[in-house]
Image 1 (cartoon, rainbow, N blue to C red):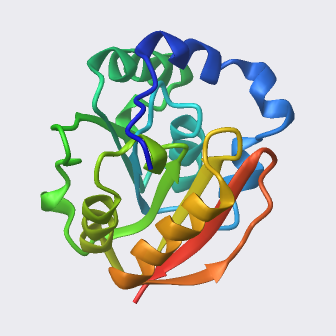
Image 2: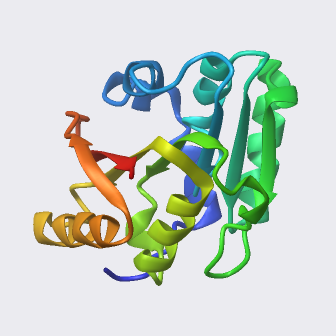
Length: 185
């Protein structure tokens, strides 16, 4: 897939409340996230899903949100403070080609990659890093926009994930997206 990074200013459109009409974060995340979990969100942007992740993990849980753009993270931090969720969210700046999650090896319960895999220069590196971060049985929800990612491209990503230690466990229906629930084996 092509490496097409979302410009930081587009983040304001992505967190628009109108988006909830077709992609409601609580409905999408509730089947996979519960109180006390450690959740990781690579490519979090300004936090459309991050705030709901923080609500779902509760005060005993933690969300590590990572992005390559500091402006996205600054907006996420502001939104988290305003929502009263800043103590549950750790915002990290990624390095080119790496999400900087080595300290979480084998500890995460859940990872969300929403509209991010198609932006990465090396999806094998991504799936390898997510495999390393998740514990055995941990879940990675991958969802890519149909407008940017053809079915053949999405299937190629799932094949890469399979080669790197993930098993397809479900195919949730998320409007406007091609989605898969992958379990770390």
